[in-house]
Length: 98
Image (cartoon, rainbow, N blue to C red; front, side, top):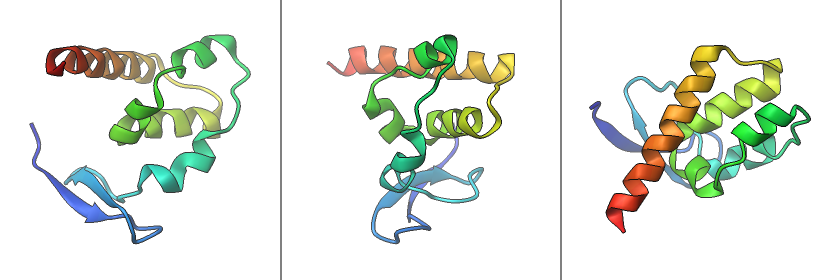
């Protein structure tokens, strides 16, 4: 597991974001919320991205995948599988903590 640390959001400079050395920019959920709110027309992708807002708040990877779909209108099979795997892992971690 990579070392994670907190850094101020590069846009608003108000909120702290947990990042790793692999991430270039620390952007908080509040700054990306407007971009993520775009409606998706493809029914399969709409179903894929229909996860709890808490998952998007806590995981910048999920936000990046959704933003890539919004920007390029397609995802590779590996991106889709990684998204599903991450959501599944987050759901299982949530059940353990309860």
